[in-house]
Amino acid sequence: TDLLHNALIITVFVALAAMLTVFLARKAVKSVWNIAGAAAAVAAGDRNARAEPAGPAEIKLVAMQFNNMLDVLNNSEHALRASYELLDRIFETTHFCLVYLDRELNFVRVNQAYAKACGYPPEFFVGKKHFDLYPGEKVEAIFRNVVATGTPFTIYANPFRFPDHPEWGVTYWDWSLHPLRGVDGRVDGLLFALLDVTERRQFEQINAQLAAIVENSNDAIISRGLDRAILTWNAAAERLFGYTATEAIGRNVSLLIPADQEARAAQGRALLEDGLPVSAYDAVRVGKDGRRIDVSITASPIKDASGKMI
Image (cartoon, rainbow, N blue to C red; front, side, top):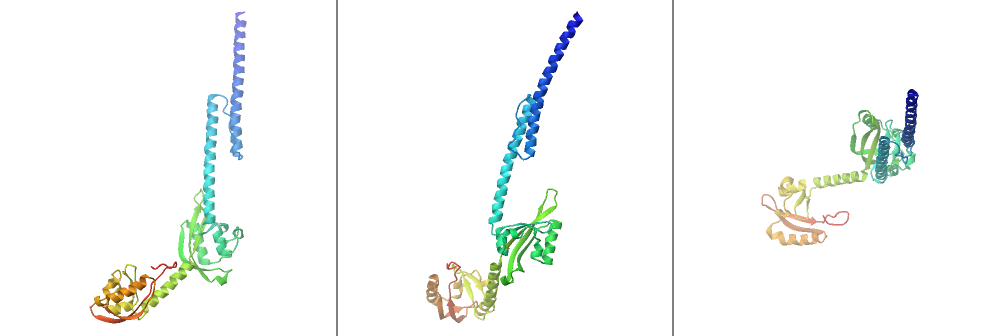
């Protein structure tokens, strides 16, 4: 009887333990399933999925950590999206011509500035090979070398003729190539950035021509700043007054004016300060060796593009 009584009690305890185990297991499995289901939903693209923090304390902690991780992930994704949108706006609004090429030198994307410079809509370029449109063996070799070595390249005022627009003549471009690497470190593509400097180049050529004319003139030609400091001094001025350009530049132009000529020189300065030219007049100037030199002088104000005297 005692044996049967004890067996009955043991059986009851075992049954209760089994029922409790099953109850707890169901709670645990349900909670784990909630976490697993949320993870699967996130993997499928649903970033709003959440794990229900139910079940034993340890599982609740896991669920809360999972939810916190999702919050961080969503915040990071929003920040990354904002960065991409900012870069996209810069890409499309900058005055620089920007091109993204894959490692085979096919167009992936161009911005509006590049498309406008080439005379086509942006979608025209996508998928086409760059050097099918704009052939050039030497330049293509440079592009392929940047892909192969990952070394950036920059060139300034490079002359270029558009093969499809010969009427545009020679244009000049500052351009650079920047390798873009993937997670494995391999060059996946190139950022090709260009700036049209044709007008600047033409202006430099005109200035060089004018400088050559001034330098080779038989007349002494001098320019000075508003503070009367000498800025330029050509070879004829060296011959006439005896000062070298190094000796004269930076000194006040009054070093050439004898005292008895100062009043007439002041009249000319007054006209120049009003922005008016000074017609040719005879005067006397003094050379480096002190000798007095009879000269005929004309003077004109130099103005910038806005009309301001500089």
